[in-house]
Amino acid sequence: MSIQILKNNITSGELDARLKRVYVTDEAVKAQHERYLSLAEDFAALFGEDRAARMFSAPGRTEVGGNHTDHNHGRVLAAGINLDAIAIAAKNDENIVRVKSRGYDMDVCDITDLEIKEDEKGHSPALVRGMCAGFKKYGYKIGGFDACTMSSVLSGSGLSSSAAYEVLVGTMLNYLYNDGQVDAITIAKIAQYAENVYFDKPCGLMDQMACSVGGFVTIDFNNPSEPIVNEVKFDFASSGHSLCIVDTKGSHSDLTDDYAAIRSEMEAVAGCFGKNVLREVNEDEFKKNIPSVRAKVGDRAVLRALHFFADNARVLKEVDALKKGDFEEFKSYILESGDSSYKYNQNVFSVKKPLEQPVSLALAISESILKGKGAWRVHGGGFAGTIQAFVPNEILADYKNAMESIFGEGSCYVLIIRPVGGDEI
Image 1 (cartoon, rainbow, N blue to C red):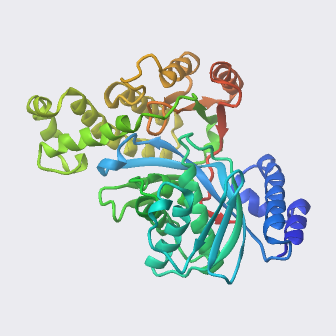
Image 2: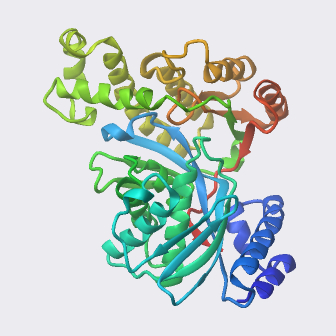
Image 3: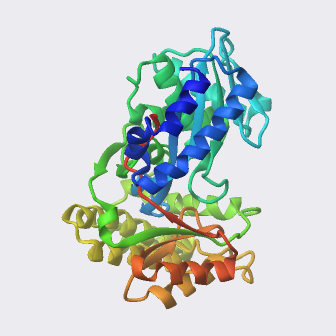
């Protein structure tokens, strides 16, 4: 449909049922009208008003359980959220993909040339080229299109803005050229391929999978080339809690070594048993051999291995609690996971900067407000950035005010677990 017809359908409410399937509440749907109308104006200004335009969305994600377990082939529990990347797009017959994200330069990709470009590594055009190459590699159709996008998934927030963008590009390719026949798991795998091979970032699959599938999802990476993915049915809106992500505004600069050390130390422990990753190591055998392991790789590596084994098993308990509808039991496991990350995985602050501990402070304030009522834990990679909290609705305003009085206005995001992953509106 033309941009004008698309805008009329948005303002008239004709698309509200489809928007509600994605954004859950009537209030959230109304808030989306302005976003999509504004993006339609962007598209018309860049690409013309008469194009056959379509609307797409892909969510950010939150890690719920399994902190730093995926890279050692463990289990994770994640969920899609209502913060998302959206697009208005239309096919072209030029074999060119143009993606203009608000606030950024336009990404342009000639899809007749899908070779890896060294000068694109680390930049968003690599993700576009990588997604197109991945679709072709998996045997799916590709073609040119023009798109305008915008995102409410803040970069560096631990909510996977890059994965949301990758899945959004994949969703456009899926519906524009493959009639929506590419399943969400395959799109996630292609997104990881684009980020690993073309963008040159060695990420796991959790972020892309949670963004692509949506809802609560558990992923078992025991065989990382064929992860076992299961949706977890739970009506979060009925829990009486809100999910808060608090951005402590801590800097991620100079933390690459801290992140890398977690994986390398876990793998060093696995190496003591002739294995590549901790998932291949028998936990009882590891515990019996702690004296010799600590002599080889050090105490911190042993502690991080203890965290891996416990948090990997804990994911199953969290899933079981959600399936039973026992949110109090679920919260108890969230607290256990957070305690393990703090004491054993040690990814709450960097030992290189002991005077800078914004995540520790956020957890301390959360405990003072939520103890005996809610749950809190470090979120994502850790060291800086965000924490996660499950906050009873009756004290949500107090919690939000307390956090924002310390970390700044707008630092506490109140989220909805989104039931739909990457999708055409």
